[in-house]
Each structure stands twice: as structure tokens, then as C-alpha cells.
Image 1 (cartoon, rainbow, N blue to C red):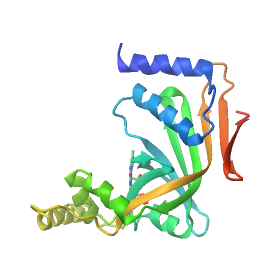
Image 2 (image 1 turned 60 degrees about the horizontal axis):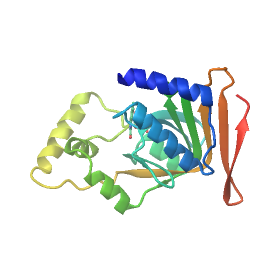
Image 3 (image 1 turned 90 degrees about the horizontal axis):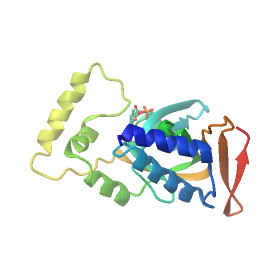
Length: 212
Ligand SMILES: Cc1cc2nc3c(=O)[nH]c(=O)nc-3n(C[C@H](O)[C@H](O)[C@H](O)COP(=O)(O)O)c2cc1C
């Protein structure tokens, strides 16, 4: 059976069942769905749209790769980028995963904080060398005349670190979005889509269904 056939078969099964016997913890429920997504689409990156807002409350959204999920959702970026400058003044963040092949969406609303230097160092050390060089060469979201500027800086950074380990630049690191509210959405074959919302209240997670 081809991968596409597998996805179609799984999507049909989920459309029939909806979200049954949900995990009491949204991170547990997320882990189940992530596992099912990975089984359905092996090798696909785990990406989500990250929304932030500036000090005027003006929103902006962009994709990020979610590197891992522990007690929060971890991504990495340049600390001078728009998302990072937004988060410096307003920690509120929302991530939206779109596992559309399975008819699924997960929204995570929460608060984003920087990882420790030790955590960011550990992740940086595992990156492919070309991405490490790029982290030194590209001042993400700065205006540039043309791409040659970055190509030139890339070459300079590669030369500078030739034959040695590349340290993490201080302007690059990770954030963890700690969830306060998580919503799972499942497309159903009867068109009555399933929505399950978790809220962290009084020190515990509670979940409830929402009208589609
Ligand atoms: C699928 C995908 C994954 C991406 N992952 C990241 C990421 O993990 N970190 C990052 O800084 N930019 C990532 N980008 C680029 C961002 O979407 C964005 O263009 C960049 O971070 C600058 O955003 P900002 O100026 O709004 O901060 C990704 C783009 C795509 C399409």
C-alpha cells in the first residue's frame, strides 16, 4: 500500500470516529496526534504557524518548525526577527498546526519564553553545519539590498570557522510556548466537526467540547 493510500485510509477512519476517549492532558493528546501524523506522513517536518503581536497589538504570523515538545512547544529563531521583537514586548503567542491530510488542526495559545543558553547551545550543536553558518551570516528580518549580501557573509562565516566547531551566536536561540489553552479540531464525515478545548484553570487541565 502506498503512503498516500495509508493517509487516505487513516483520514477516513478519523473522520468516522472523531476524538474519542481524549487524554486528560492536552500534551498527552497532542503526543497521540503527533504520533499518528508521523505514522501517516513519515519524514514530514513538524511545522506550525506562529502568531505574535507587537506592542500595538498588531498581529503577524509565520511558519516555524517545532523542534520538540516537552512541557511546551519549542522553536528556534533569530532574536532580532519580528517574532522575537514581538515576544520581547508581548509574550502571548499562538501556534496552529495544520495536519490537513488527516483533517486535523491543533491550536495552542500560551505564553512564550526564551530557552536557557544551555538548552539553545545543545540544539545548535546538533544542527547541520550549513544552518550553523547561516545563523552567523543572516540577520533575520533585516532589510537587505540583495541576496548577495547574505551569500558573501555566509562565505565569510564559513571561512572564519573553518576546521573548528561553530559556537551558537548570542543572537540565535529557542523559545518555549507554554500552553494555557489548546484546541483539537477533527473533520468528520457527517460534517459535524469535532472540537475539543482544554483550559488550564485552578492548576489543572479541564476539557470540553465546542460547537463546530
Ligand atoms: C515550513 C517553514 C518552517 C520554518 N521554520 C522556521 C523556524 O523554525 N525558525 C525561523 O526562524 N524561521 C522559520 N521559517 C521562516 C519563517 O516563516 C519567517 O519567514 C522568518 O522566521 C522571519 O519571520 P519574522 O520576520 O516574522 O520573525 C520557516 C518557514 C517555513 C515555510
